[in-house]
Length: 309
Ligand code: PSU
Ligand code: MN
Image (cartoon, rainbow, N blue to C red; front, side, top):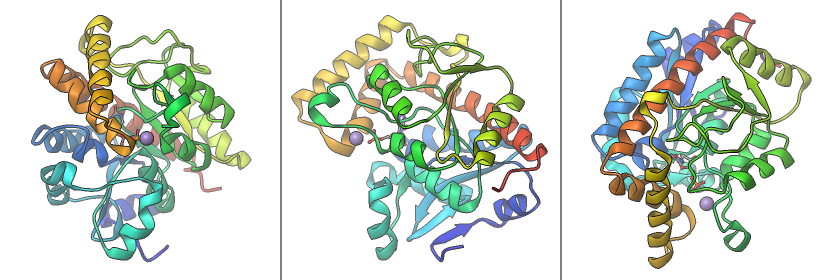
């Protein structure tokens, strides 16, 4: 274990006993939702994972330590500081660790730390991807590269159409990342259940998700697996409402010259403002839904004898 990694006692115990553990990211807390809903949601997500038979491990960088398992106080601290916490991707780790600073982990860094700790299943809301207009801007989230190289199963609700979903799928295909639809043949689009794009495979049970990922690990194929779990029907948003908000958010982003790592947080906050908070309620529900599936899948992984290739 490297000296930067700090696994909470509860998570360390669960891992050593082969019990199911689910990793959770912290950028969704600091940059993905406003305070105090971000903290309330993070704690509810942890409880949902416990209710479904697994131990939650919220991941973050605190004082230069890679934390696998944050306390409620640490979650409150990250949630209150919000966007003042550095959004930390793979490229940020060396300097943050050397300086002993804090960082909110994206899908990328949560995967890195989960893999270091030995956690195989990670639940979140949405992943980053190929941005619209990437042909010019080259804006492609590091999340896709991480899925290509780090062995963690990421359970999300698809990707928001702030991204170019077609190009995102092409990129994942090139990188050899399996894209699974949970109970669906169609890639879900975060707030909406439908995107018009197909997934690689439809899988209907946590046991089969675990079996597929175990096969990948046992073969020594590098990289993760992306599981896309549609938002429950009753919480999904009408496509016209969300499409209009996204179009307006993209327009304002262009006008204000927002670029680089600010793009995703800017777009998330704008869409929330433009939909009068309706999207926040959907966002919370889809994360809870992913947490339930992740806990059951981690339990199925653990029953199959874990898997430490
Ligand atoms: N998409 C969402 N909600 C989020 C994010 C993405 O719907 O909170 C966050 C995640 O932490 C993701 C990151 O890993 O944004 C991607 O940022 P970028 O596009 O800058 O790579
Ligand atoms: Mn980017």
